Length: 250
Image 1: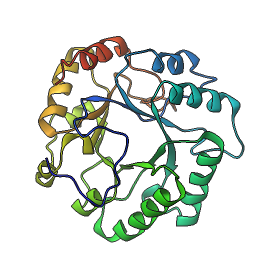
Image 2 (image 1 turned 60 degrees about the horizontal axis):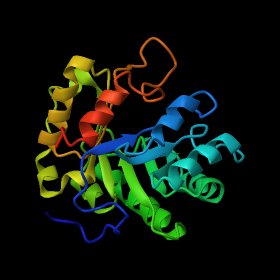
Image 3 (image 1 turned 90 degrees about the vertical axis):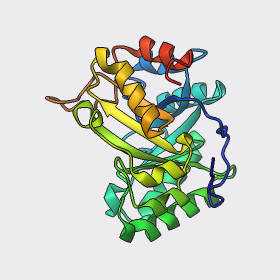
């Protein structure tokens, strides 16, 4: 399988099995059971995003510090949530957030949420990613949260790319861009909400066919309220953990 030499090696294995990437649970004070569930031995987690308050917040949060520390102590990679606002936030704002995540929570890397996907924005994202790797002593694991298939050049800079983020009604008819076939599945992530329990196996098959090794499927949709669909764990959490953990989705 081809690997891009411009991407720094991370602690992820090159033969990474299908696993879960958690885009951002509710605050640990609101969802303590969910955060505790993530530390259960054997849970097939690739990483968990820490989103304190649309970013790192204004001061260290002891509840988030505790939650992140317990995950990292079990060997789970914790990523800080950096909102790029599709390129509208300045370089300085994003890097300032990154420094706070590092200083306060010792994160292992970052998810660049709402990451631009067009060719014109690539130089600024390249600059941002290079800086994130520089300020992180161990080489940050960087996930580019496009939510769609970006211009192929982005693959030279992110460790992983989120190439789908949206509802099951779109995902079940989606197709992977041809260029993704030149890269191994561990390079791609899919986040899908509104997946009914009876269609969970179908969703796992689509992820396999499209070559995405990091996934997050949930039956929540977030419609009709202010809750993000990713904030609670899916109602079939035990089922999806069992299917992935036993290799059913391989």
